Image (cartoon, rainbow, N blue to C red; front, side, top):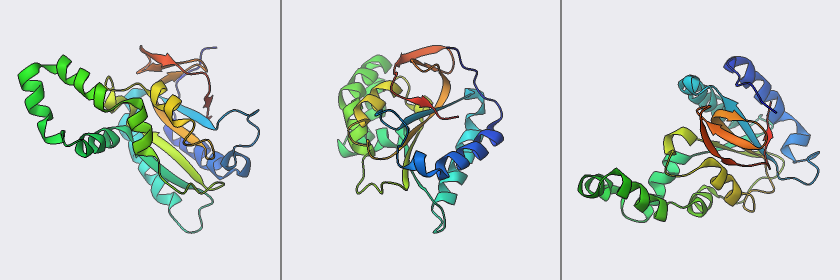
Length: 194
């Protein structure tokens, strides 16, 4: 099944607002015992617009009268937090200059594992029936971590709330294609959100 990447971002975000407000969506109902993980694939060339609209959507969700609350976790910010926690953030530039980009990549992948990302994104308590975890920054962390690995490790932590991956690329229900050209790994447990 091949899916087209949407280019009508404004229309998509109107549809996302309606979907997020749906009580069945908020309570992970109607999924045939699957986890409530979703992918919003979009044209990577529209990244800045998606970021802006996502920020607006998150801000709107913080209003008292909003039926849902978006909790955003940006993978780039998560990477920086992991590095800061491990006390290596200030040493990254020197490591790359001394050992090269490949060595830096290997070192960061040892420290910022998919498991570490999932733990760093977690929060409690989750407000079931209201909270939606929205994951952004996928393109910013490539190739440090792959989106499918983060999702696999987040399943047990976020099984009680919907999780939406904002994905700069294509998702065909089986495989993620970052920037619509890089195979980002198999992940069949998510649903296209729109």
